[in-house]
Length: 233
Image (tube, rainbow, N blue to C red; front, side, top):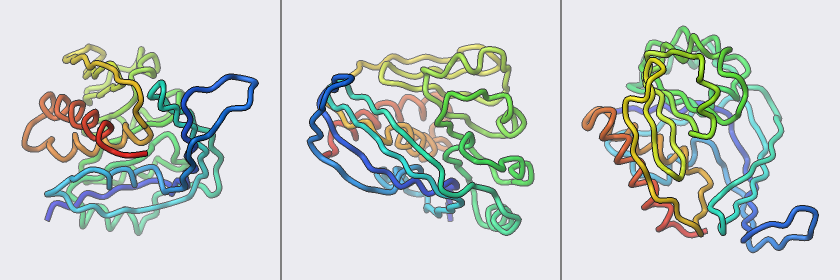
């Protein structure tokens, strides 16, 4: 059994789809949906042979403006209940999982308990807050994911763990403060990019054991773009 455990808050997303916005003006919303976000975006990807086991702790409400004309998203969030990793959850993770992915480590109020996790794990981020408070759990991880627009947050952090930065222009893999791999991507307009980072992480984890670091990252970049093109609003 290849058990992939996903841990994080339950994100209740209200997504508003627009085609361009004007600040200070009345803007037209073409569609509106309500869905569970966060690691639930993994379900948009075929991750076989992994079997997904979701683990929620805490909750958050998010209002997301998805601007298809620019292939961009902007979110506004507020917390309902905090997130923490209980002793019981750690026991289940250590006993039953082969991999743990956390969405999102910078949104977990009580993350120090991760030091007790023995299962290999990966971390994803969702804010532009300092990464210093997470250094210890980051250094113990197998893989780190983040948006390339937040690259400056890692300027003085020399981690031995591979950091995969991604955006619409491509990917960078950084290790020990140095770029060890870079691949460019042609950005496309008219895409709903909500959840793209989670989809990228899902596709990477799916292939990591069989393809390795660089090929998995390249494949995840290509496949994420392909899924964004195919999916409907």
